[in-house]
Amino acid sequence: MKNNLYNYILGIADNSLILGQRLGQLCGHGPSLETDIACTNISLDLFGQVRSYFQYAAKIAGDQRTEDDIAMLRKERDYKNVLLVEQPNTNFAFTIGRQFLFDVYHLAFLTELQNSNDFTLSVIAKKCVKEVSYHLRFSSDWVKRLGNGTSVSKEKMQEAINGLWTYTDELFYQTNADKEMVFEGVGVDVTKLKNNYYSRINEILLEATLEIPESKWFQTGGKEGVHTEHLGYLLSDLQYMQRTYPNMEW
Amino acid sequence: MKKNWPLWEVFVRSKNGLEHRHFGSLHAADAEMALENARDVYTRRNEGVSIWVAESKNITASNPLNNGELFEPAQDKVYRHPTFYDLPDDIKHM
Image (cartoon, rainbow over all chains, first blue to last red):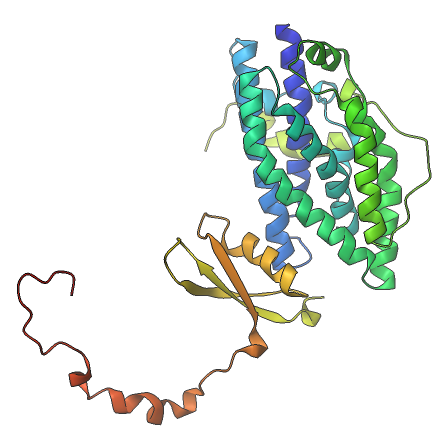
């Protein structure tokens, strides 16, 4: 039970950690001052959520490790985030597309997690729901703007959705820990979120005058620790200071 | 991109009961985006409970060149401040 809960929390937290790091990479590089700040605000929201999760995970682990150790000092295979969130900031359309495809899932997931038997998780979920509602508002607004914008913005937005589509099905994959936690009434049964997810996504893509990708071939692996080549580079950025100067603080 | 986006003025109410104050300006494609941008740029440190945005071109401003005739005549008319009354001690907060 304890081990499953620990792994379950990591599965949730790593999505926010890796996506937060990705968005943080845009700090000072956003397409305009306003969108730059918006993306880093979302990044900070996600890091805030991550701290709550890892503090809880550290308490459950009950050993010497702190929230920082758990966040920063695992090996690549021990990160359980979905492949979607580790995908690079190829261009603004990809950043928005990745955010949008994750936010629709994230909001549905947190909405359900509020009903968890686990008091701490339900309280964290209650706090996060408001933040993530705004993230979704921001990302879906931009999907519609780019889709309805110029022929170039539409093409780039469509390209991003097509390119990222293959990572969407993994959101509904369950690890053994996930299944155990659903059985215990702690976890969210993500398989039940799938139909609503795709119909919500389709609605917004229609509004954006974008096409819904037809591809039925999907990537999985992230939740089991098998990642795309992008995660290693991201982690070397994330972990550099702690690896080079162990225990450094500021 | 930024060149094509018009400028907006942002007004934020810090607390219910207070008035909206001018906080600054930003670029946005339309009013809805201006509101979202204002939320992210100006209220990220818990500064506000309400936001107004107005496109800068819609604001009519006084010309600094006219400051002489507009504002200087008021400088030597201190009697327009209600400071020459003897207030009874019982009246507070005046």
